Structures are given as C-alpha cells and as structure tokens.
Image (tube, rainbow, N blue to C red; front, side, top):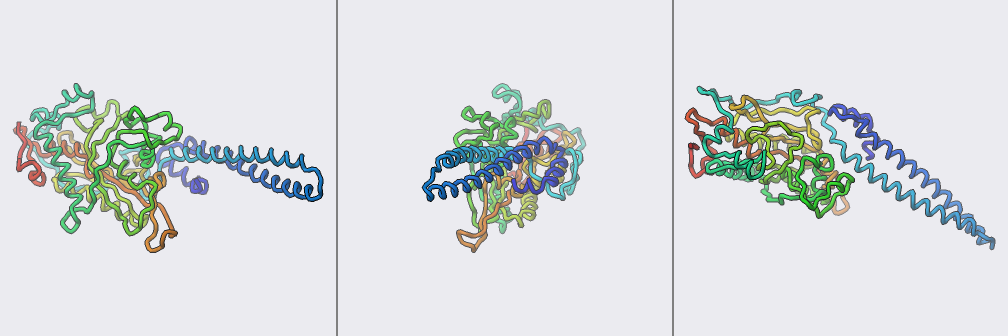
Length: 444
C-alpha cells in the first residue's frame, strides 16, 4: 500500500501500458485511502482531546472537585475512538482487497504493446521440415491412427476433453516421464537439477489468491461444491474449501506460503507433473478442433524461489530448461517476449515458447516462462532471511518464477504433426523410444 501511495504516477503509467484503466482500478483505492486517512486524523485529534481531559480530571479530583462531566465526555470519546479504529481497520482491509485486483507492474524492458501481435521474436530454433505431401493437423492423424478419440470423450464429459488410446496414451505417459527425468537429473549428468514434487490436485482459496488466480479469475476455475464463490468476491479466502488446480504452479508455489526460508536454501528449484483443469470461460469459439485448448490436460511445471538479485539469471535458466526439452525432441520453436498488453496478471516479464505445427501452418504456445518478482511472494507471504544473521536477521520477500516444462498435450500433438509420414504413421523421436518400449513408429 505504501508503494502505491508513494508511486501513483508510475503505477498509473504501468497500468496504461497493460491497456488497463487506472481510474477503474485505482479509483476505489484512492477513495478508501482518503476515508482511512480522515478516520486516522480524527482518531488522533480525539486521542489528544482524551489526554487533555484525563489531565483535567486528575486535576479536579486532586482539588476535591466534581469531575463527572469530564469523565462522561472521556467515556464518550473512548466509544468514538473504538468506532474510528474499527473503521480504519475495515478500510485498511478493503484497500488491500482493492489492491489484490491490480496486476503486477511489468519490467521496464518489457515492450509496450496491446496484444500478441506486438510480441517480438527473440530467438528461433530448428528447421521446419519440408513435406512431399500435404501435412495434416493432429486431430486427423490421431483419429486415423486410432490413438485420439474426441467423439467418445464428448460423450463422457462434453466438449474440450480427449481420450487417448493405445500408443497415444503411452506417448502421453512417455512424455511425462521423459520431462521429469530430464528436469530431475543432476546438472552434472546433463539434467536440470530440480526436485520432483507430487502435490494435491485440489487447493484452497488462499492458495489461489497467493499465486494471483483469485479473486480476479474465479470464472476460469473449476470450483468444488464446498467453495464459496461469493466469499471470494468479498475477499474472504478460506482454508477448508477446494478448487481444481489450473496448473501445478498453484500448489507448488504455495508450499512455502507464510514461511521464512533460509537464504542458503535458495534457489529452490521444483518440478511437478499434474493434470490441470481450466473452465476456459473466455475461450468460447476458440480452438474448437483438436486438443489445443482443453478443460483437462497434463503438464510438467517448473517453479523456482530465488533471491531478488538472482531472479533474472534464474529466469533465463528456467526458460532454457524448457527449451532443451523441445530441442531434445527435435521440435522447431521460437521464443517471444510478451509485450505489456499480453503479459499475464501476476507476471513482471514472460517469455513464451511457441512450437511449430506444420499441420496448421502456425506457431502455438507450448510454455510460458515468467518472473513474478515479489508479486506472488507478497500475496503468499513467502520470505527469506539473510544467512548468518540469526533469528533476528533481515527478512525480505523471495522472487518466484515458473514455466511449463512442457505442456504435455501440446507436445504430444506437436510430435504427431512434425513427425507424420505420408503413409499416415508417426515416427517416434529417438529420445522417447526408451519410454515407448523401443517402439519407433506409431501405425494404425
């Protein structure tokens, strides 16, 4: 709150760069802050009057005179002071809730832009394969091979679900195992050195508030019957309600909520496989074919907790860890730097990795690698204490980072489209063959 008060012009400029309206987001904050200041000022004036009355009461009693009237006024002041303290406290909570709907401030190096059309490409890797036939999209390949069944999935669950069959199911499992093995293998052995976590697939409201999904994006989530959406809109985040996770970022980041970490432990690098559940409330009519945009999908996530001065370097490492999965699978991709208008709510800076899909003749996002600075750590109260300073040493917020390493379903479909053959079969990338029982090709 103090930062927003002291830097309103900067905050307003950063919000405009995100194509957000500062008047809408900050107007309530200003009015609440004004009321709070007035309550505090009035409280201080009444406290001064109470102290003055207390001295007068003492003097009258010492002189043996009647102090009843002044004592009655003192009691009335106490009641009014209690009301003002409660008002200031309530306004303070309302201000914090107002701030919870304000996005993170993007880094200065993030380019100004309104949409994904303004995202600069900063790197391209791999050669696009030349086909001597018309490449097909993954939904046609998967259906012809009998490994992807969207029709029966719709019968089971409705639109935006998939059933994988036979070698298709095994390919999904192979990708998960391959990614986890590469990420958890020691750096000295060619891996990335992350610690694997298997978290719950349901979390409470406080966890979703910590990473920035609540309260703003409740409609994008699947809420269990014990979760009170009305309470969320009031800023009440409970321990005992449940939501399906939209990404492993939520439970893994919140592992250290309300904790103080030792500096010597940083950076903490964690990876987790989970299913992910998204309502896709704003995606009506988008990507209706295939498995690009699903209500349920699998993902391997990378999460880091770092010192502030290390977060830029760790962001680059995390992005490279995701890129190396694509390179090991031989999938052409590009890295783009998201502009201000396309950067996610909680992020200060994001690189998107986009894989080439020849069956659709376009690049599609397969990983977003973000540095949140201290934004999530403040919401989740994740701090660290400088090493060697003892229990009373300086405490400050960590920086959090995460990225997909990778979205498994999109990697699955990218393999189908990039490794498809003229006879309808799909060649298995060499890196995955040990995980496929030595299978080199998927055939009908």
